Length: 372
Length: 143
Image (cartoon, rainbow over all chains, first blue to last red; front, side, top):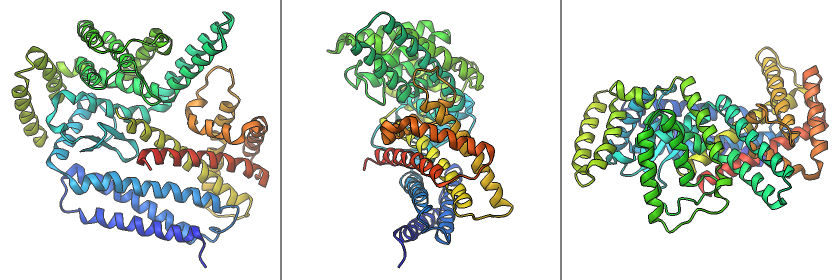
């Protein structure tokens, strides 16, 4: 009788072949960038199926020393096939005009900001706002994103997730190094000053949050601001206004107000002081409208000096990585960069008249992106 | 922007480490425990696995011994979730586990064959990394 692992591998091979067959059936129906993604997804599935086949004929598959490691391999391959089915196959099978337009916009953005890798594919299929699926090279957006110019800066944030992930050997070495140093110094000073144990524990908890996921979110906001300029700050304000308490954070995300401070750092480093002041004034208004109050420990959780240091580090890295800044894009008349910046200017000038402006700009973008 | 982007980031990081570490251990087990001697490409793969594993263990040992030391670049090479899972898994045996991992690193540097004791501690890392990747995957799919 075949071992459990052998049966599971046979099942996985069959599942991989089904996904492969479905991807293969889409061959004649897809536009260029979608077809390229399809080819890459097929190559990945073929490699995965090949690895499964190699395991199936491996004479050591059932060896007790090796079987647990083969089982670990099985799980990673199974996850890969499921991920391709859930994201690549889903987006390729639908390939709506909106998905096509958004993918074209994203490709244009990649050119404008000098993103170094092939542009990810984009699909308006998310039920949880924007999502960057790094392993799949896919960004999912809200269903109506193709018609929402004011939220387009968030696409820059998702693109930044790919940068932060792929450049982590450079980025994290510096970023985590400075975060570690900051908290190590704070803890040392705290111990010297004889702070209560609870205060020291709170510092350690904050450190864990910063090196966990918060540095990633801060970095993505900051890279997006480097690329997108004041429009990213405005889009962040707009999004934050819909989310309630600006001081609330979670394991994955720092507080909206702290993110605002991070965005402001980049704007000021880029010389956009006037825009940063204006966004801050609107933030003050948002806080006035909000019933929330800043928690007493807030400044210890988000020390201004640390946020500023992270901002300087990211700004420097963006320059070293050769990214095109917001101001350079504006000077060169970048298609999407200028449309996004212009949309926020138009909205602030006359929010009531904005829908007409938006419709005209989107029509123009659709025509130009289709030609690109 | 949503939690899923961060979870996807964590999953990609943890799965990549788990895959790489497990593959290296599997190749070396084949060679050192089962005495399967290959030719050409197979031998080159064993050599590559040995180098990769040594590099990963070098960083892992530094991170496990980190307590209170200045931050090092090695920490960026090992996902924090894996370190936390390993610490939880070995609990009070952390000093012994770290010492054993350091010994394995020495064996790899010298080119010595690894024994069952070495693979036992390497499997602990494989299991911690696998559990971390699986947990991130479940969060990603919300299952």
